Length: 66
Image (cartoon, rainbow, N blue to C red; front, side, top):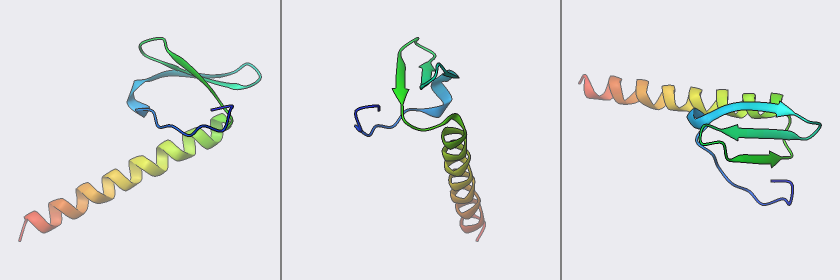
């Protein structure tokens, strides 16, 4: 957050992200968070997380086939 408090959100619940000039993440329940990260950083973090999840799923699938 803007006060340096760290937190996690469910990226699947993000409705939209806007620059106003700070970055505002609005969730599907209409709660919102003002954060220090740029929109590009947020998108990059989501992409990294999704890639990790896909790698874990792939590993589980490969192990289960034995």
